[in-house]
Image (cartoon, rainbow, N blue to C red):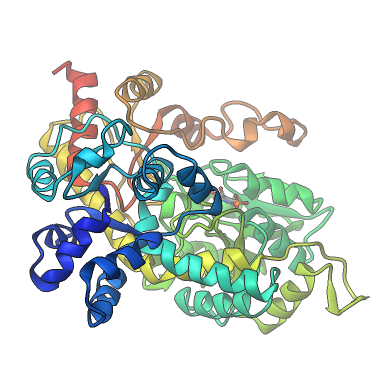
Length: 503
Ligand SMILES: Cc1ncc(COP(=O)(O)O)c(C=O)c1O
């Protein structure tokens, strides 16, 4: 539950900060607590003692602070209700909070927001209503943890006027390189552009072939086409959904320049075999790690094993920005320098272009968001992994394993950007049933790339990659983000059971 603490409630809490019953609910992480920045002066005045400033500072550091926009304030001033009440009510609505906790709920009558006394909040948390909705992903649910840090950094960026690349991007790159166990990282405009730039850095072009999987997001093969090369598809392993390394060798020709394994859903491809093949045949390896930040294979980080690793900061990723963004990692100084130039139209000095690149620059604001979220990434990843285990156990306990194949962790550590079931021939029916029961779910991906219309000229046909085609028919992703709790998972599993067994 997301709660806005009303001024009166916090004035009372300040009287006994260490042992406030209502704050303890928040401290025990039973709800998420917010306070409006505009309430601070009133709280201090209400506490009636300037010595309380230190206490209020401690309190505000533990809560998340909601700052109204000028528009919010304008609307509240024009409202017939008292300003503080109208503003609190607007903040609850526009930020999707669940209730205001106040000593006098009657103030909020007629404002169509839920107003609870501390005792009523306690009651609600002790006996929560049954779950009847689980979103596939609620990006805003983590704002409680990150928003104040992000706002601080974004405000500094706005004030500095340094919007593109610059110190903020460099700092983020350093931290990301360290997180990914690589020497270098280059912040770029998207995961798609990361792939494109990696291919450009390898000088892959017309006449070259690049081996990859057809069971991935479009960008993997799309970027190969964009540099003028030919994607050569290899079918997937039916358990991991990743490229089957044993099939790669027979597709290598004199034209083959590189292999792009995709660490799909957050689990690494079988890199030992791929790297051995690459070395034997003098090929380059680009890891499409867009879904796999923090994933590991035999103790090595995704993006650190090949020549380059490509990451996406698309908002739904485990480490997402507030818009598009991406990153290329590498251990090679040569590639690092080339990537830095490619990102700014190939210039090594302003207006001097030895090679031709593009505008692949990253905004400082995206670096602000990524840096703020990076502090939480390990906790969030562990929570995703815990959620995957919980699903696995719940599905087993519900006797669902004859109906759904659970996603195995073949190469720890899987970071579960997606938790994907294999469902069999009733997948589409199950999807509809889950959606009717307000459970978000998605198919990643319904059409393998070799059957995409735009790749017709490559000459592939239905039946060429049976495992990819089967996976496209049978898989379904369930809500797995770190914000999904056990009760929601129980609802998802019970609904799947109801679909298969009608009970
Ligand atoms: C496997 C894979 N590759 C590449 C991309 C492209 O990333 P972006 O959306 O940031 O361009 C994505 C993102 O959806 C992806 O999932």
